[in-house]
Length: 606
Figure 1 (cartoon, rainbow, N blue to C red):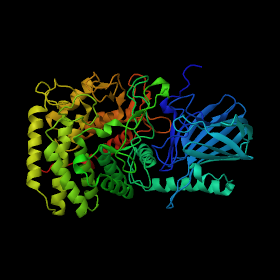
Figure 2: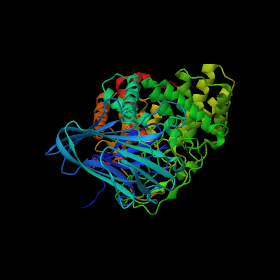
Figure 3: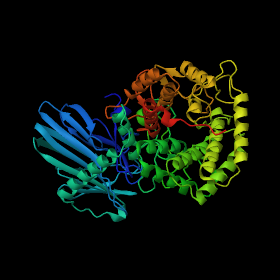
Figure 4: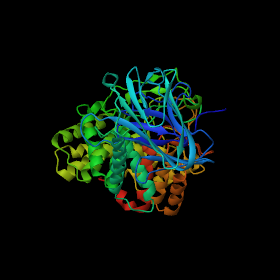
């Protein structure tokens, strides 16, 4: 049979702003973690085809597939066309807007569009990353319960299901034109398991309510430029990756999807990175999603409170700091890409840039009407004190290097951003603070970067102090954050260096992976960096070239508009965790830069 794993691009995201699921073009849910993105999945075939578990509904005979999201929603429609007829499968995770402890429910709807199609379903849950094969009991006709270990599921199906060997359910049924069959899968804690049949009207109402929620949310999008469809889909990804109770946004819905097939660069991205915060908050404000931006800032304030000197680069969606990295040796990994990791050891790294991202987020919040209260201001001032103490120390850098600590140029620039934004807030709100000390430190950082961070041979910014002129795509941020203007000769030289050394067929790699980062193997081109290059070109005066690059990048979205973290520049295959918030943030930022470049300009306070 060859490799059974579909391409990463074959998947689509379902979300209820608590949970995340991935559905393949074959109607198979191969990843699903209910109630929190980083929860232990009930289906994880994405990481082990034999052990992981799945829930597939598809025709028994050969078929052709087209699919789409119902417009302006995160509800998926998959259209199966066979020689005998056509069936549409609709998939959605029910969004709850009421307060309290919500049910977490997946709804699958099978509708006969024409002819008569033999449909086949297989429900094979495997809990706890495939370690637990639950017991499945048929409680009543079309009603089954699965339990064992930390999870429980109730399956209610209008397809005629039967239990196979106590560990899976199967169904085979002809679906005729006009047939409309509902399947509801509800997650609960084992001690709360009480299998009950839901009225059909309730299931239909929940599906309609979910469609209405997403459509109403999309109508609030304030971007009406030439790339509205792509921007709206990217905004829906960000909302879909949001944990509704806390306001945190995770980097991706998955763990351990590889940056190189068969490689070891497989990380857990189901956490919220401070690095993403400023970009996310700015994008949400720019698109008119003020409530979501302020919820995210509230999460930042609550999560980071009391520990300015021990600010982490990432947290759990509930604010958790303890995110130990563990290798799951029993899983083979996507297409044999090991190790499979849960947790992320980079949470313990010292990364100087995180201070800049924190203060930049606070500044975007303030300039969009948010109030910096006394408690938050005290915390931000203490962050500034931490920057003054730490800016001249080596760190792991924005790319979370697992090798030797270095004086990364982008880290120094982000330390400058931290103090620059602190001074902006103080002056805008007439706040108490040692603005002179912050400006003095800004000047010292600038002098250090000017003296040690620029390669005299190329006039481009170095990757780190003392290197031999290595290119680093993180330096594309230097003009974006306002450290220099886009027409500064060093910015132009940096764009040229990145373009000549890190670009393959229009795609930008982060840096040269030659062992410097302490991890073996290679990786694909980083889509966020590619969008940064498009933004730099557009805002640096080469709007035509920037637009061409942007449109080339957007053409590599999958058939429902989603992007992973990376792309294989030679094949165009998507790589890494999926869908990736960072990539979609880059798309939004670049689209705005092409449409309204002046709206992103940062004037420098010095």
